Image (cartoon, rainbow over all chains, first blue to last red; front, side, top):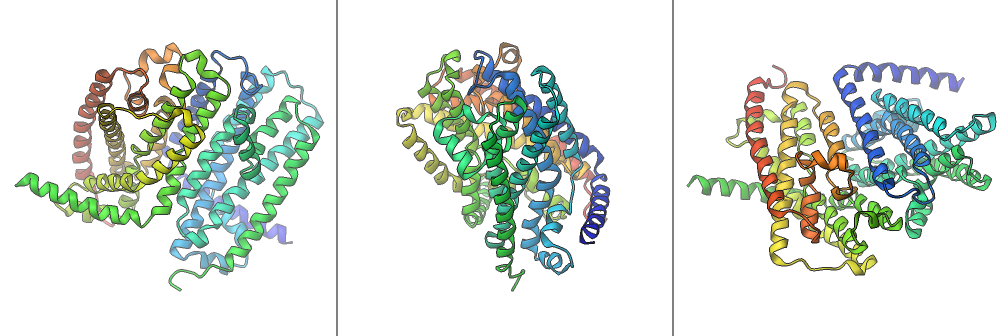
Length: 264
Length: 264
């Protein structure tokens, strides 16, 4: 019964935010061109790395393309859901409108995480899937049920980790009010996800798998696509994702205790 | 008399904006951190020995990327985002009445922010040298001054381009998506992620005709002591400034004619 209520509310969210975003139709077109150019740009950068080398961190060019594809899909998801919603938290807290969210008879995390949607991100997701299917062809990956389930599991875990990171940083707004630039820091770190983890030096590798698990986000799903993945890595990713989700939830509830509305 | 007045205005604006920026020290520190992508790129280059193929030693490459970081720090422009917000909120109207082009205000804001950012950039450079003690070098005074000038030119070019885009707000309201589109070629072609020397020949043949390599690659090469054509680079920068400035003036005067204040 609860689930049905949330589904119904989500439908309304979709409807209203799509209606308001479609007001700016040229914007969506420009965003599509931006997404295409940005993909072309990063493939260009990758081709510079590979122009005189067959391997980077043990990855061939065709294999590294898979990482790009997965990064593009995840970036599309970020642009569709995380970015428009979670940057809004900053506004809610600065202007005190979080009060209205908290008063609603609905889970506040659900409300602020899913209220808005940015349709131009869909195009990026589609772009990512196109590249991914191209990669599946050139790497001659045969699709079978276990492969599909594994890739589904790892990609959903990546989405959970990504969401938790975004949500975690946005939550800190309750204390620091302006975390706009903290999000920029996260974005620049996430940029690392475009490249295989092994291409970095050992210390950076540790940093990006222990402190900020960016390594898990793109490298492990790509390894699943190449059939290189080991069971413990996938298990580890599932565990990390669960821990992140639970912690971000707990952290939000904890942070709310410190929320003291505007002007109070 | 007139020049004296302008000087006083600019000085006052700078002072106001500097004290304003000092309020947001943490934010600016975070922003400085978010610019460390060049160091990650350096890590990929040296860790995979990619620089051997372009004949740049590890030390020179690390100096290049450090300089690229510095040039980027002092040429970041966000005028379009400020202007878009001000124009959507109707704050532009009072600015237009004042006997001062509102872009001077934004210009002073940027300069003040750069002054605030300087110590943080130095701290990051300090840490960089701790990890890479080989790459410490002291450029001679002439080169240092020239690269300061060229960094300032790079900032001016970007400021002019963004101001032109910002003026499109008079027509479309959401000009920031155009800026995001323009940011993609800036990111990939300016030399922030890979030095322009490493680009394949089919790109090098036309890239020096665009403004992009003069934004980061040229000043960074100059400062780090890598090979570059000093006179050619500086004259191209000046050429672009002279091309863009009349364009900005034209679009500004057209735009202000078109401008209708909120609620009219």
